[in-house]
Length: 141
Ligand SMILES: [Mg+2]
Image: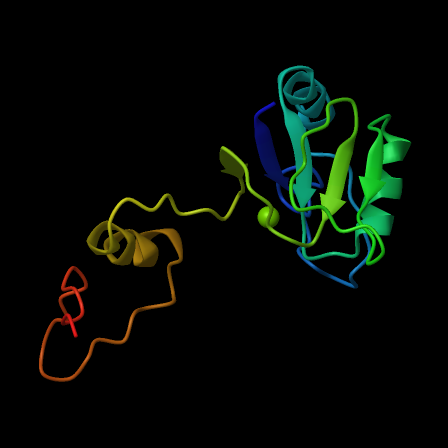
């Protein structure tokens, strides 16, 4: 069973005011609950969040999504179940990660070029003396 990881804030929880007071204060992103249900028919789905898993699970349950919070006593190496989403703070293996702040990595050159476009206002500091070649491999020893 292929696994899909889904970010919580900004993808499921609308997060219109950002972190704010740390509570889960907002409505679902339009289409989020139906979208999760669609994913859950074909994939094992887990929710990847920096929040504590329990309140996220409770919030999802209020919208009819069966969610299991990961606890210290029950750590999962993989998530291969359908019918329930796991809520975890850890990044487990998945075939795809759905995230509103993702940058698709292809090469370091592309990544460093895309970053200032996707995160405006945060410029990269260049090394003194010119451009660093990120494609260079370390010398063999
Ligand atoms: Mg997010």
